Image (cartoon, rainbow, N blue to C red; front, side, top):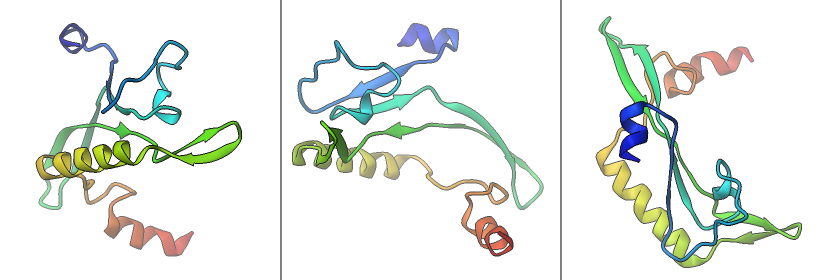
Length: 118
């Protein structure tokens, strides 16, 4: 991973609280089928602030599924995994900002301004 970061190549980091068989997993979407938290390479974002400055930041996505499709049926992931994911989200929320910039479409104020026009 250190080499991928140094070379700025895309990467995925997988986390699980149990043994997971990855032999038949699709690398970019294994979180959709397995009890895995998948952290993808960050995207660089830039947006203006209310005071006229700019924020340059990295946007990280942590993907996981609380439910998965198994032979056409929707099945909950194991309770232990859901608890593991909740603890990870709580920890990351304490360290990282999870809100977006004031003029990004998914910011609450901007959504409230634009949504009525839709």
